[in-house]
Image (tube, rainbow, N blue to C red):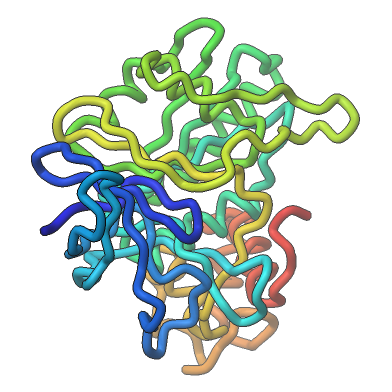
Length: 307
């Protein structure tokens, strides 16, 4: 039999078939992934073949993982040198960000976008809680949208309180399998609950002490909003480490830098302080946003995206 993984708890996986039957699956003990350093061999969104083990308890053994169209991975927080697969076979990846309570850093946004570029997954930015912005913050947000929009990333502005942008957000999900990410506290679950109240995802209050959200999601889950429309809700991601990426590759995943590939004086230019660097020249001219270049340097130095 075949099915799709819709929930993972670490050792057991919830599987749904085309006939909407639900099974509880596990991997056989001998199962190993060759040459793939991840802490979890299966992710939500994976298609698998399985054999029924117990018809009463509806438990099955997973025999095969189908080849993936794509996947999203982050650096494992528990195992050095390994990654943790967040989801597989997705049509788009949505990052919910806020500029206040809590503030999402530009470094984190750019790391997310670089990850999407690396795995060839279209990315969407949702700027939430816009009802909390004063005039200055609203102007700053427009400047950011101008930067990301010019790079080809769809930007949506939303407010759960006023309902602004909610229909645009809902429409962006139609007929797609969407991964939805963001720091804890950005209002991700509240947004989803607004467009799919039947799901009743848990929401957490912002801790006044740390101004960071309390974690409410502990593992990735997939939900069907309507036929052919799925969302994958992920745990609040604190830090998105660039996983298994060579230094010379990083600039390739910045569209504005990729467009200038081969135009620097030196073939092995790292765009740091080399003479004849086209990237630095464009940053000085204002053609490449300084914030984006700073994010690039941070990734090159492998700094924490939360700073």
